[in-house]
Length: 325
Image 1 (cartoon, one colour):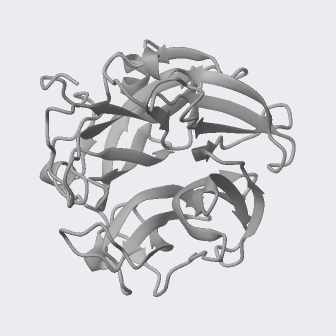
Image 2 (image 1 turned 135 degrees about the vertical axis):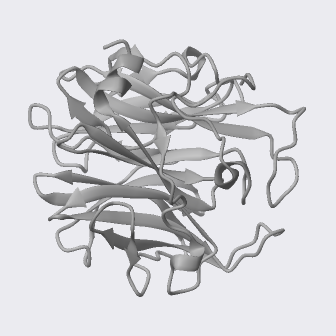
Image 3 (image 1 turned 90 degrees about the horizontal axis):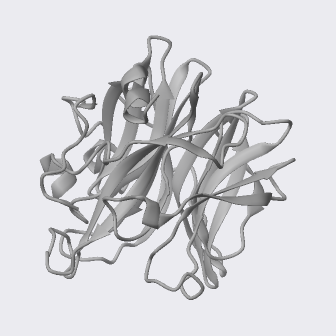
């Protein structure tokens, strides 16, 4: 990625960033990032990833859990007193990277699961943010799943990022895909949405970010895109970190959401602030939530440097213009 590329001018980072970090959490926490955020039953809800038990300079952590926080304004967050989900069995090592979508007033949770036999993408549902029911777990290796906030002709819709190491023929040249389901359990109609080679500023993998939001022009969606520069050592808690994660923006067709009908030719956000440039893995932005308010403001929630959770805002009309609408 060229050093002169900057975040889009319509993007405003919140002055109180990070909006959530480890020091805010009332139980052991080290890295708070990659949160799913939605608005449900009159409140903002955040499900965040917490890697705990590690310190700067090491890559070993005691474990990972998913925590919950609530907010009245989407800026000031109150974490719950204990973790929401910590899933560990003989087969399953951890669940992480939650994404939240409200469909027909039920809260759906997409997440990644590390297992002894590969990384799987999971979908669960909850009606009370207490008990949760697993609806599906993919075959390895698949992750970064997000659900659309409504059905299309009765079908649930999702974006996902399989990562076939051998069949793709290139290291980490992974792509963004679509599939749908009648019940959130059995998925099919798999369609390529965007190939990594179609993202001009990135030279490695891409994948979903936040669940899409619906506009009159199409489904507005954020995605992550990775650039690798082996000649540039980036700040991290470990050596040999060479990846920059940026945020892309695309517009998908309302009736055929696997069709890209517009895309911002440059990343909409690139790492620029200290809390994005330095941390567990510096130069990393990862979008996990996007909320469209009635005023037209879009709240974008993203992880910074795999360490903290951040907020940026933009007007939906400006984002659509970036996609050519």
